[in-house]
Image (cartoon, rainbow, N blue to C red):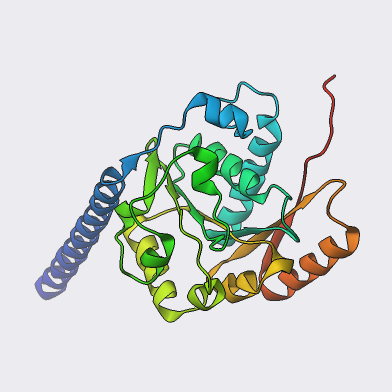
Length: 262
């Protein structure tokens, strides 16, 4: 009986030690995330810039923020239910407003305090996120994806839970870079260091290059942004079918709709 009691006590001690070790590792991981986020320079977009570029989800004074908040909630629910973290945001062609949708979704997610979000400008041939926020980065996204620039040279922090990856230098051979093993390693390291709940990748239009095809293996799901009175049904159908065959399709966002208030 004494031997059984001693064995049980030893087992409980081992379990307790394992639990303490696991808790210590989790605490170290959380501390690492906090340090990584604290090392980012702050992002404080000017009100006139956000007003001019229709970024309506920062202060939410414009009624147009409501559809983005509803999209945020649906996106969060789908991501959490499926255990997904990364989203490709693309469009059939240019001028659909996908970068604006990405920005408004990102700032809407920033209001969700228990959700850490990264927005990464991977429209490498025609980067727009930095221009729309009127900010710049210390290095190019190309250097970052090649492992030649650190996270804090590319990302700016808005509040405590949104970081935006800025690019200012177009990349000529962007598809080759996006599907490179080095870029995949860099993005995996980004996730490990920053611990995001959601990563939004602003990608180029689908019908203008093979960049989206090159990058799709790196994401869990996709959002297709179409523009009312601009995108054709054939374009949307073609792109939606293509995305559905290669990743999980979160949905199609119809942008630039005319609406009136009650």
